[in-house]
Amino acid sequence: LEANHPTLRGKVVVIGHGFDPLAFQPQTRDPNRVLFCSAPHKGLDELIPIWDKLSRQLPSLRLSIISSQRLYGFNPPDYEKALKEKILSLPNVEELPIMPHHQLIAELGKVMLQLYPCKIADSFGLSVMDSLAMGTPVISYRVGGNVSSLLALAGDTPVEQLDPKAFVEKAVR
Image (cartoon, rainbow, N blue to C red; front, side):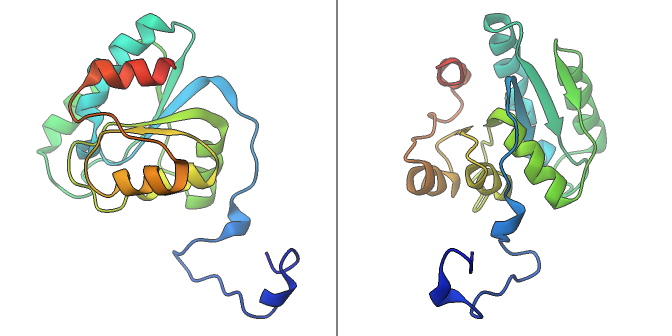
């Protein structure tokens, strides 16, 4: 950053757990891969009917899931386990392990799209921001802070809440 903006030389500091612009390096994208990256209560249940429809329309498309279990404790463990088992039973779905942030950023840059069907008023979705910083489009419902993020940073509008059909239509476009 300082190399491109000499007036900032000596004034840029990277704060731990902050935004490090050097971490966001271009990746080779897989045109047949999309990603869900969040805790299970932030849309994994909504993703099941979305992926069922999307995978039928685009059979070569693959879905990678990076999702922690019991991170916040919103749902009983059996419920979250059942969600994961259900989505992993659908075609072309893989689960990736939880990984350090720099590896997660790279994964977000390797996919064509992040699917983020979160139906709760998430104030600030970090994986959404990371995706946008990597130039990866995000499809999200019109709820919470992601509305502002998508409009301001990507010039895009989210899908109306709880409309899996519109979610799939937007993904296909």
